[in-house]
Image 1 (tube, rainbow, N blue to C red):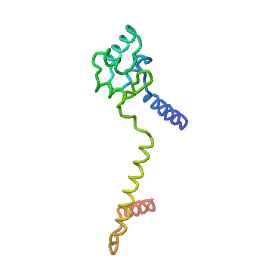
Image 2 (image 1 turned 90 degrees about the vertical axis):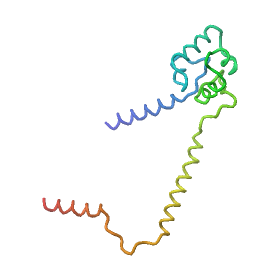
Image 3 (image 1 turned 180 degrees about the horizontal axis):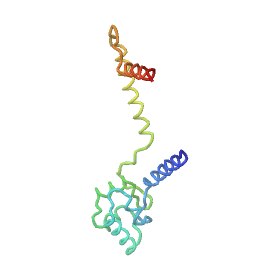
Image 4 (image 1 turned 135 degrees about the vertical axis):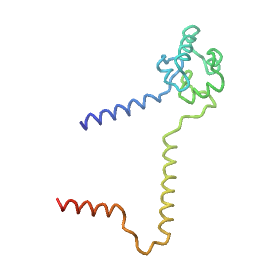
Length: 148
């Protein structure tokens, strides 16, 4: 059972890695183009028809000119989502977030936690702490077990 669960987790992890791969507009099939956020079945069909009819797209400007509904703003969003033309992302499009940026934000969270912990440690302590609810629950549970 554990092996099956681990295999399923590994398969899910591998599949999620492939879902975020870049797709070249000149090489991608309809399913790959549909996987890009902002491209649906109708738009991917229009891209493939234009590519088949008039050849590969030379650059982003050519792509914008030849595919109806793709303009400056839309092409920037598509590039940010992972679409490329001849392996090139659109100039001026934001880069995909890197793993290092995520790691950099994690220590900030730890700093917040340590700051709040040090603030609570410097606060004056109560003279006698009240017993916690979990302690009284444990005591009643142990009393019930001894009665059995």
